[in-house]
Every structure is written in C-alpha cells, then in structure tokens.
Image 1 (cartoon, rainbow, N blue to C red):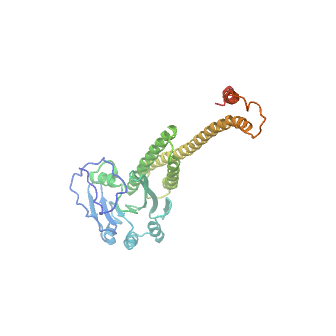
Image 2 (spheres, helix red, strand yellow):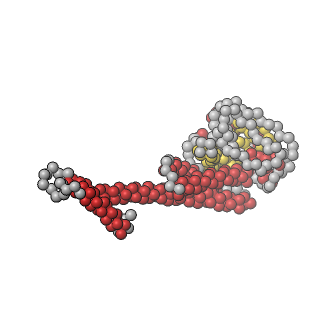
Image 3 (tube, one colour):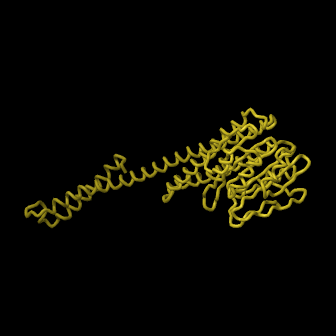
Length: 363
C-alpha cells in the first residue's frame, strides 16, 4: 500500500501523486499532521547507506546538518509562519532578499546565484477537473553544497515519489549529491506541466467537436476561458525555460558535471511543454476565427433568405397596392374574373422570380 503524508483536515490536495512507488523496506514513522495554519517542516538526511527522516519543530534542529557529509532535504509546506521561515533562513545563512522572495508568492520563475547557494523559483501547477480550474502553487528551491531547502505556498505537494526513491534507494538518487536532488524535484514539477497541457488539449478537442457540429450556446465563452488559461500557463512556464538554461550554464561548484546531462534533459522537457502551450494558443486562435466565420456564414445565409422573401413580396405589394387604390374607373375592377387574373398574375411573378434566382444560383 502506498504511503503518503497525512494532510490537515479541511485542506484540499494540490497535486495527485503518481502510483509508481513501493513500500519502504523499513517502517518509516509517520509525521502527524500539523494544526491548521501551521506549516509542515520535514527533514530527510541520507547517504548511500542510510536514511534519517524526521519532523522539524524548531529551526535550530537543521543546524547540525548544514555542513554534514550527507545530503539533507528540508521541505516546508505552507507560508503561514513567516517567523519560522525567518529562523530557518538565519540558521541556513540565507540573504535577506532570499527570504523576501520566498514569502512573496507573486513573482515569476527566476534563478539567483548567491555564491554559496543557488535560489530558484518555479510554479507548480495542477488541474481541478471538478471545477475545471488550474491551481498554482509557488515553489522556492535553495540549493547548497550538501542540502536542498524547498518551500511551498500551500500544504500538500507532489514530492512523495522522490521521498520514496530516497527511502527505497531507488535509482541513483542516494548515490548523488544535493544538485541531483534539486533536479529530481524540478523534474517532477515539469512532469506535472505535461498533465496540465494534456487537459488543455482535451478541452480544445471537445470545443472543436462542438464547433464542427454547429453547436451554439457558451462555446465562445469556453474558448475565451481556455485562452485565458493558456496565457496564464505561458506566463508561469515559459520563464522556467530561461531558469533551467541559466542553471545549466552557471559557473559554480554546487552543480557537478555528472548532473549536467539531467539538466539538459530537464531543459528539453521545458521546451516541449513550451511548444505545447504555443500550439494550444494557435489552435485556440484558429478555433476562434473558425467559430466567428461560422457565425458570419450563418448570418449571411439568414440574411440571404430574408432578402429573397423581401424581393418576392415587393412586386406583390406593388400589384395589390395598385388594385387597392380608391378609383372608380380601373381595368378589371368591375369584371367578374378580374380578381382571378390578378391572383394568377401574382403567382406568375412569384414563380418567375424563383426561377430567376435559381438560374442565377442565388438559391
């Protein structure tokens, strides 16, 4: 049975975990959920031989791991306690601007090199299929010589697969340094982008079928809503391509040469997601043009039919108007067959005009 962290009651999960983990070989003590309004801080310290996992209640508990020979991952879920984050920043030796950026959840993805650590901001995205909305959560990563600090805006994250890989010594994560751990976290975030773009593609296909079926209703509103979602994704994801590119080219000892191929692969994935977003935007723009053209064609068809009827009834109105004038001496007005002649004449005019419109291919 897959193990996962418990969450505070009343809070919705931001991301869905991938069902690809196995139970750990040794029992892991479960971390009790924090009270509402209190962030969750967990620490995982590992080497190739052993793993230590614990909950952090005071920032000073992280101090012994700052310069250890092992790799330490400190994860903070939630920004409800700025004082605790300030204490963590002081213990880990972060710049004041780094703490300010961590607490500010409205900044674009970026990367900053402070020499002894690297600070990265990314956006975590997920789809709420019930409300058909995209959720966003800011992720702050601090990469040091032997540690990674990850801070999330809300409680709940998609990083349980990484934890299980560390617990089970799966793959090469236990044999590498903190730079590979930072890559693994960013790679999991980028994988979630593919899920979001797949959902956008499904919605586009549905709207395309509605337009092809000539359905009316709120199609245009749904197209505009998807366009706004794609624009939001573009603002959240496209800057990450520059962030990963800068991370690859940084001249720093914090990133080993053995991690560079994985960063190149991560950059390729971000480029693929960016291309998907641009494709979705182009499809929505083309879909909007097609829908407007369909509406225009339908309107032209209706106006053409109305114009045909108006053209047919115009001479009939003229005939009835002439014979309806109040004069005593008018042709056929006192003849018993005058009315029949006028009706036959009007029917002839109608048939003649219909034949003419048909001959001109106006009908």
